Structures are given as C-alpha cells and as structure tokens.
Image (cartoon, rainbow, N blue to C red; front, side, top):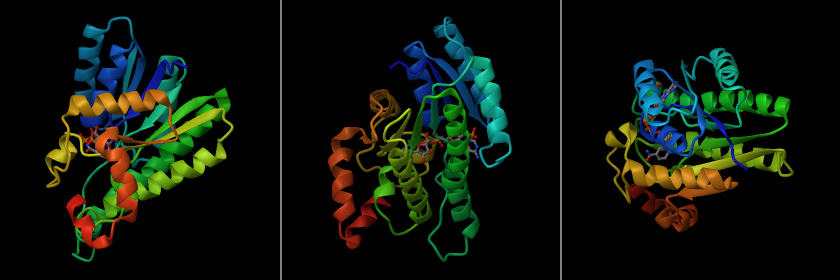
Length: 249
Ligand SMILES: NC(=O)c1ccc[n+]([C@@H]2O[C@H](COP(=O)([O-])OP(=O)(O)OC[C@H]3O[C@@H](n4cnc5c(N)ncnc54)[C@H](OP(=O)(O)O)[C@@H]3O)[C@@H](O)[C@H]2O)c1
C-alpha cells in the first residue's frame, strides 16, 4: 500500500529532513513541522523546485505544547486532504549523569521524547480511527533496548518507553486497520549525533535515511536500522552484561 500523505514531526534537520527529501523523491505529499520554521520554509522551497508535482505543507510546532499538537496535525491534514502516515520523529539528546544536579536536562529529554511522543501518538490514532486506516511510525532508538551508564540514561529510558508504547499498540492493532511500526535507528549523522561522543558504527545521513525509509515502507512491527549491524546488535544488547554497555553511552 502506498501511503501518499505523510506527516513528519521534527522535520527541520537530521533524520526528519532526510526522510522528507527521500519521500518527496518518491512523489509523496508531505506535512512537515518543527519549531525552526525558517528551516522548514527552506526545505519546502527546495522540494517544490525539485518535485513540482507534490504538495508540501509546513507548520510551526513545539511538540511540548500539548494543546497545539492536535490543532497543527488537523491544519496539516486539511492542507493535504488527509494524512496516511504519521512519523513521530521529533526528539532531543540532552542529558546528564543521573544525580549530577541537572534534572532539567533529563526531564526535558523524557518530556520531548516520551511524553510529547505520547501526545503525538494519541492525536495520530484519533485521526486514523476516524478515517479507518493509517500508519503510525515511532522513531525510537537502539538504546531503547538497553540501559546505559552516563549522560544517555534518560535518553535510553525515553526510547525504551517509546518502544514499549509501540509494542502495546502493535498488540492493540494486531488485526488492523491501523499499522504501527517501531523503528530503532543506530547512530546516523545528524545535529544530535554531532554533539554526541559515540560514533559506534556511525553512518552518514544519506545511508541512514535510505535504510530508515526502506524500513518504514515495509511497515514492519519493529526494525533496527541500518539492519547491519544493528539488527543482530540489538538482540545482543538485550543480553549484554551491564559492565559492557558503556561503549553505547
Ligand atoms: N541520529 C541518530 O543517530 C539517531 C539514532 C536513534 C534515534 N534517533 C532519533 O531520531 C529522531 C531525530 O533525531 P536526529 O538525529 O535527526 O536529530 P536532530 O538533527 O537534532 O533533529 C531533531 C529534530 O527534532 C525536532 N525537535 C526537537 N525538539 C522539538 C520540539 N520540542 N518540538 C518540535 N520539534 C522538536 C528538531 O526541530 P526544531 O529544533 O526545529 O524544533 C529537529 O527537527 C529523534 O527522535 C532521535 O532520538 C536518532
């Protein structure tokens, strides 16, 4: 099934902007949102020039402004004449060692990556239930599979929560009509990873986005991307002794 009308949150940079370019190249119509609207406007202009036959709608959205999420999703849906796929992608990688006095950083990460993702999920499901179909994509992380020491503890917890939410929804909608995919990217170049010390198996943005989009199009229940090495690696991470998890942090 071709999902023609795709909404992506956090589309102003990194994986979100990369996915927008890749889906535009496939001729899909796009609803893009983020806080940095200058970036969204530039991306819209670029896509309109390269792919004049598609529709691209953009909107300002801070996903932590919970009341705004349904309003903006509805506006974008009106602009495109409906939404077939919502990609919950907006996220941050702030964080500090637990107990180091920087609760604000860890709280911000859990609020954006998990609580705001819940708000986006509820909104998308209401839309899909009303129209009788839709594909919900949750951009989690390979770190959703394992707790890690240090600055990424809250980030890993936020993604574990998101993966769990997705698993519950996959059980809820096992017989459809809504499809739910939990996507677990490994390390892919982006603004977020530029600030991170971890470079383990890092791939460039194009390579990462290519596997991400290919996985989303297959509509799996769950997929680690790029599959190699992260498919087997995620299985290994689940059973890895905690003393060996530092390398992922
Ligand atoms: N890159 C990786 O290796 C990797 C690995 C695993 C998972 N991920 C996940 O992939 C997603 C995208 O990350 P990225 O690597 O592409 O990082 P990025 O380049 O920093 O992009 C993050 C995106 O999220 C948006 N965002 C952040 N806070 C937001 C808020 N409060 N409201 C609305 N939008 C917000 C940003 O837009 P504005 O700042 O303009 O609002 C930006 O477009 C995240 O969920 C991340 O956890 C990435």
